[in-house]
Image 1 (cartoon, rainbow, N blue to C red):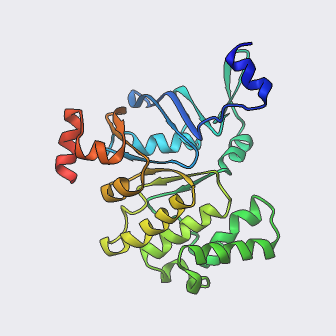
Image 2: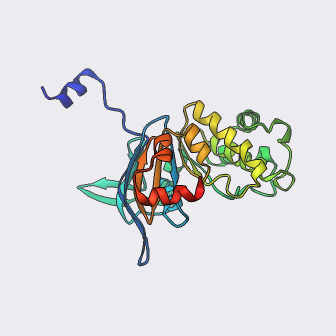
Image 3: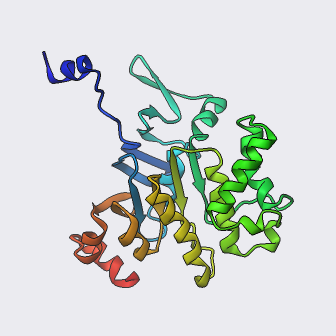
Length: 267
């Protein structure tokens, strides 16, 4: 009996990584933004993506939930191919409705908060569970209340976005993403649009999520957060992974000249 047959026979199946990227490339016209990205993120891990502007970090994040269609390679989340189905060795792009179903399990928080301005914090968090998941109003309201409490905004439930600070709006955006009970959270520079004194309150919420075991991929310039919270750090430049490893080790002792040059300017 082979090792794989023994695994099947014992009823123990290898657990796939939460995210697996295999040779992911993305081009916009003649501009190749991603050039064969391969990496894995295990369940419960936090991976931080760092690098200069234009290196492809945000594009890679958007490919993970099929907001951008990959030009080559494949992406899987929790063992499921994202954006495509495979038949007879060929990949076929999913219909929009099928892609949207996959996206329900992947929460995303953007640089800009993208809250509905005409809705209160509570209504913003309730909207997707009501409309997409068909939850009852009572259940959606209870979950939204609990989530707003979790991100430190129990006293701001009835406030409209215009009456919230940037940090508070971003925390509402995090609660809104969590309301769909995602298995994976993607953060695209969630603090870059905030005043410096508001950054900490958002990072504290993210640290709490990490401590609770949420699998997270974070595009960030906050190196202190990466050092403290991330399980792995990936440095990207010009559409390729230049260096990856333990955050403390990569930050203290980068092996590549390009990585050293970047950190000399940001640390």
